[in-house]
Length: 277
Image 1 (cartoon, rainbow, N blue to C red):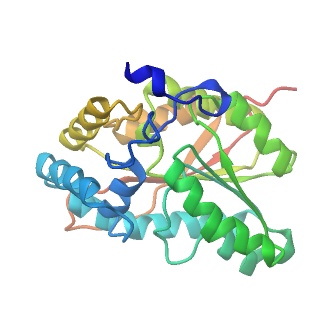
Image 2 (image 1 turned 180 degrees about the vertical axis):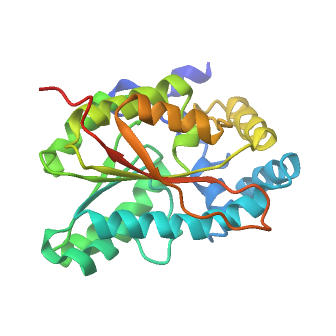
């Protein structure tokens, strides 16, 4: 049976955003599919086919992705300017003009610490080759961690080994929270609120209203035996999850008119109301 060939993943759970059977590299990969949607260069033909089907199911998707590119740069800049310690949750494949650790090195020098987190084998291999190794050769404090965001207690514990959680930390989630179910999202937000210092910030981008694309993406993943999904979510639902866990939703970058419905973009601040004594 298919399950008999599966190899155990880190922490004993199924991999998020990648294939459960690692030998079947010919199937669609989540990170490469979104790299293509984000106008990147690291997709394969099977990834592009799924991306096209998603765009056909949600015609506004292409416009949202264009808006997202601009919004993401603003969110990443804001977090990197405000915090010398940054964790990028679900970093994906390189698609920005300058990665967060490069911005941090310019802004903070040797004080900069950057942690990239993902659970996709393709992303981990690329991030370690492109970012972690070159940065550390030059003396940069950059780590790439293989962690599943659906298990936030483990995530928070491991982050404490690489970052000083007693002082504020900047968190990035660009097109990442879309891949968590509501209960998983709430667990992640609550866990980080309990472990990070008050004054920490969270920069977010999240597709909005792409129900058709979400159904196509999730259906393809299920068909292949992958454990990832895409969740269509609106801004008020996302905002409520954060505010209930002690994050103040205080900045929403301006929208770009004429590009269809924009993605959700926001900056939040941890007020400290849920941090244990």
